[in-house]
Image (cartoon, rainbow, N blue to C red):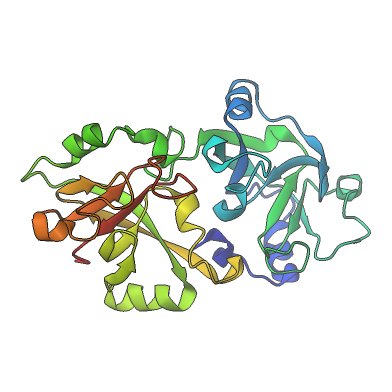
Length: 286
């Protein structure tokens, strides 16, 4: 589930666990930025900002959904997320707008401020941290939903030529496992974890299980639920034989399984969807 599920959403218990003075606590967090800024950060490190909701410092989050949204003025295909290890230090929970230490917490002995999930500080209900000293960020990697170590977004790992990707997928007899994501509700996630996936009949690519290697796309689903009611399942898929469906109205768009394929793939930026994000449909939920 999302990392915010590891939080106690009560400010006091979380504050207690953070605030053991003299105890170094490392946490994995995320920072959404542009590709250009990411390259600079990887080269020279973070530069604290003065304009965040929690005042001066480096804005971070343990919730990748929040990091994926930034910078808000950039299209999604120009954003990246840096995954970092943080020596969090002593943290204060800022639980409401107008808190007396909202932007001055560092002057009172704290190394970081934390806005808990669902505390009313932001509309989305997603959590946020602000770390005063950029040197507390100990490790920086570019977030890759496909493999998690070095690399950019999953769509960057694809050759957007359908033929090239189809060739790499379609070696018959070769089992190929890929990490993918499925966005769903918390209730549905519990059911899937207990009994497995149930193929849907209404996806853009026809019957099957809808999956994506792009975490940004999975984070958006289900569309009719608020962010704080969504979760994403990360799965390993034996992908089998795949066909690339590169335009609306493709003759095999919803009948590919009848022609010997185990999955269909909508490549990124092929014009199938407005967002330009890629999508898979896997026929056999097993």
